[in-house]
Length: 257
Image 1 (cartoon, rainbow, N blue to C red):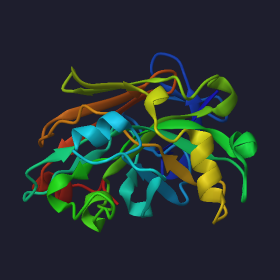
Image 2 (cartoon, helix red, strand yellow):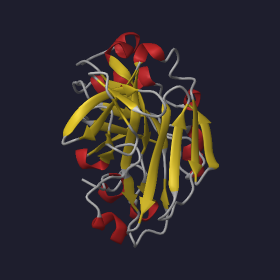
Image 3 (spheres, rainbow, N blue to C red):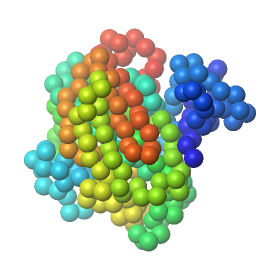
Image 4 (spheres, rainbow, N blue to C red):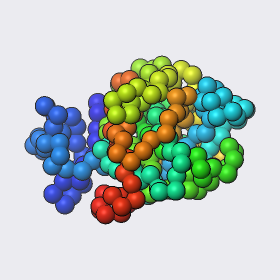
């Protein structure tokens, strides 16, 4: 089943897919697209982001693939919903998307083995973890400005239940910029699979409901400009749409955190 969250009429609502592009509220009413604001499909806790978790992407960046998971944290103000705006700062010369499978934790877990790791997964959604290469210090220490800018990580639109995704390690990933395909890959090419990542993280900290693991992106990065519309789509999970805006447009609206 698919679940989402929206802001509508001054309140936050849990929704499911409706008919004709609408969403369905818990009481059965349906709301038209455009009459509400999409929120991330879960109330996000800690966000864990994987660097260089696809060998082709590491090669694309001329980095050696990591021998252990390369993980960093993201602040809560980074996460925005479907169809939201993401700022491209005026001083950026190269800003790229990152289509990523996001794993949402559903119950607390610590010290888990790979065999038990998937038991704490609630489901999956789509993430687009934008990066500005100008701000990168080095591959093993992602600069705060690269990955912790307000609104730099759209998430959604739907959370798909774990049991509705038979094999999360065999999903096609596709990115389109203004309708043109720029990135294609498969979760089968991850260096560290989902169970391995959960085992690793839970070996030294407790994972909690609402935590999100961004599992990395394959090769196929391209610079995006203000005015671009970026679609990151994962087979069976959904298509996440995001708009790139310049500084004046971003700061003139109340759509950013």
